Image 1 (cartoon, helix red, strand yellow):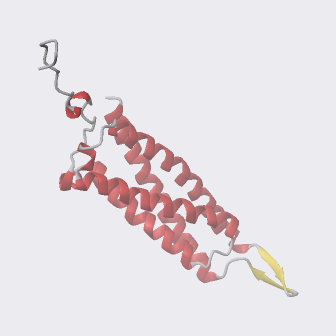
Image 2 (cartoon, rainbow, N blue to C red):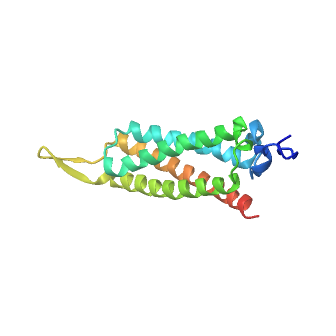
Image 3 (cartoon, one colour):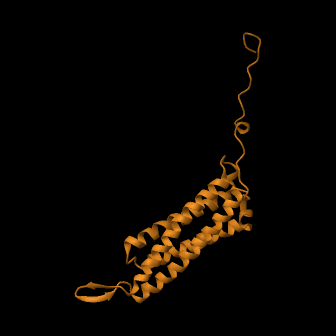
Length: 176
């Protein structure tokens, strides 16, 4: 009781003052039973293969393939983080519109990965281009580098397609 006889109200409960997170995907291991969870796993798998294949080609065209490496490595780690947030259940603890964040993330990565796919395809198409090194004409890409870049291009396309499918599913959740 205070001096005037009125009681002091208790402080507000912070759990009541914040709205619940908006997420329609299940948290925990159940995320892996959804199409979205399966696509994120495929994005990680195929994206990791793109990263490994481009790196194993010794990056003969650093201007083009450097961007492909940046996009594939960044998307790989952010997809791992995204999946980890859902697997750990942290999405239910963080107040955010996860449906919008899912859409925004997949839209951004889809655009960047599509560009990376086009650059990797362009780098691969330069196989027959000859460059003058020490007075001898040599192909820009050796046959081994060419084969590795063809595989990287195919996996970059598959990864882009997975991000596109995830984008479509996220759009449906965000705007039902």
